[in-house]
Image (cartoon, rainbow over all chains, first blue to last red; front, side, top):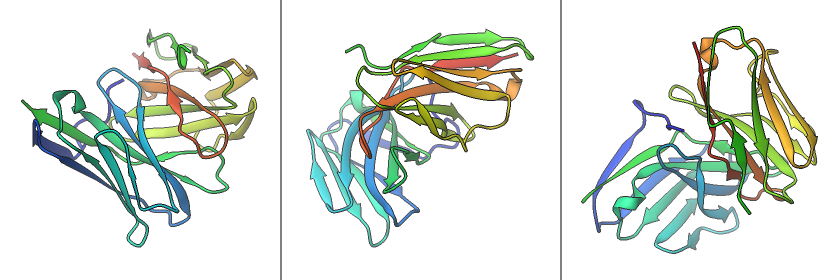
Length: 113
Length: 113
């Protein structure tokens, strides 16, 4: 499915450069955070997660940073590739909220070859 | 596993008609979520189930929307009667245990004319 379109913030990067996508969350009680990637015509796909007892977590080419003081989350993509072009969402979960994830508005990443 | 399976992928219906969207979660997952995605509102949680029991349906827009989960491997989202403003992509997702990543299906694009 197409993601939010006209009003999405867009980040445009050159292939090979690093990308940083930011997300501000609102609930200080949130204790679990996920980054999702959504390509055109597809559902959101899990990239990486982090719990509130950590401030950094690394995956393959991706790093998530969590700053609980300012309620800020970022996703860093190293050596960005054309296949990374998509909309990226952060999602938060609050303890005692069951499995319910609340999604941010998304950021569109465009990679220029 | 084939992942979360939704049907149909596309649905076009006339205003006033009943629409039923279907979802098969990943086998063994005990939480199931229905989301709606639009350009204006992004990804919204409509309802979620734990162990086939509806836990939070506060996101269901109005009484025209209903969801059921008769067993662990099947859920439906029904809109009756449908209206043009219901046009959106509807996603089903499933997950294991508390505060874990949710796996999304490919979505159903609904168009009500």
